[in-house]
Image 1: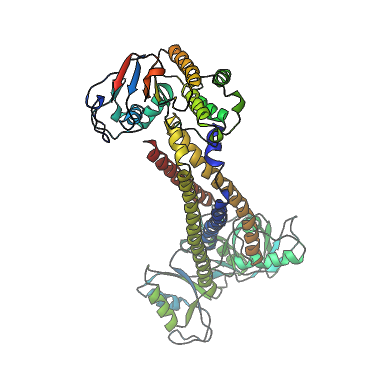
Image 2: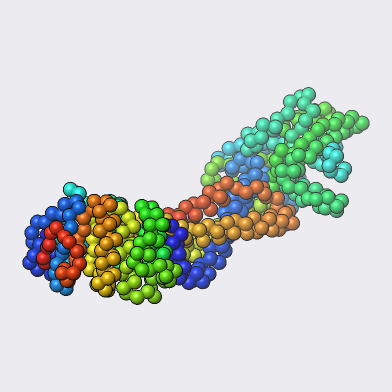
Length: 201
Length: 394
């Protein structure tokens, strides 16, 4: 795979394969193409050379409908820039996502909110929450759908160590329930989690 | 997915739609009215034309005189032969008239009694374009079908109005039972009669030729009546030559025959122009709504992209976006339909006051035209939303 913008060495020019349930750490400095990689995997970007297969199918041949199905049932995403809806409340952001697949009950949603310490902000607009709180909302939102791969693009960048630990516990729990793997991009791998494969850019 | 609606539409300044919506309403009301009345007026003109194409009723100009020695107002057999010899003439026949007294009176409990002397005429069937199966008479029949000059309805309605009765439409007049009394030298015969159609082309009551022959034989006792009007069928495209011939020989056609069709054609053209203006108005208003949809998508660029990224289907977003403008368009279309009903009621009233009795039923073609406009708008808004969402998918 050859990334257009950076053309840096690393896995961009090599073949890599992520198995179901595999935990992958993507370790690179800023600007090396971590986000580009995650966006390609989620079908958001298509401006790459080389080939990318998802469940044996060439990603460039997938239709929008295929990508919608993949995004709602196969690949969950926690975005680096969060991608919340600032005009909706915390709860509305979560309910909107949950309504796509109805995979998670409202009781479960409330339990996740409580575990990450957001119960008192349920009805506040997402746009006025702190960055740390917004990041936790984005993490919960990513876990409300069925998935076999969870993509996390610097998901803890605004969290302290304790909140990172709580979030990682929740992520691990949901991931194990579905025997899913993850791709985690980070600038600092030392304090986060266990993984099976480490990729460098 | 109420949240998607809240997300996409809650911040939009809906006052922008106020620019487009009066246009939608005015345009659609104009369009419906123009379409409806173009059809009805065309029908009205057609319904009054019982003569075949290229047939004219001719009489003499009383003051003119030349080749045919016009010191008289009737036509002789040799006059008819002289006309028939012309290359552009297909056929010439006299219009037969009654040579005895005839009264027409209403014989209906719903209608006040009305009795008048009338003048009957009969025209060979080959000159007529009457489709009604009732247009026939055989010896022994007690029922006589009649075709009325349209002026008669105006007269009848004036009479009804002065008697404090509501005025009658074409359809209702055809439901009235009439009686015809034939009389001469103490002999009298009653017949039941009904109006089966109207004409602007003939000024007297038209009856089937069989009935006229029977009545003339029985009541006129063999005295041949004078032929004051004749029918000429000209060859297609050679009406000009006929007009020149008529001018040279002191003949003329019935003016109202020409006048009514010109009037009907002028009013029809007027509604056609109105229809074009209405179409432009609706098109412009629809364009503003489509631009509003594009603006909506542009203002919600981040929201649409994010919804797609978290797994919301294109189809759902497209249906929400196009559904929003369609629901507004639909609401105002219904309002336009209601307004059209009111406007139609008023215009029908105006026509009736002016003595023009149009068919008051809603025409299917009007609603087909209206549906076509709605379908085109549905398609345009759907395709606009589809294009906008697809552009934001990748």
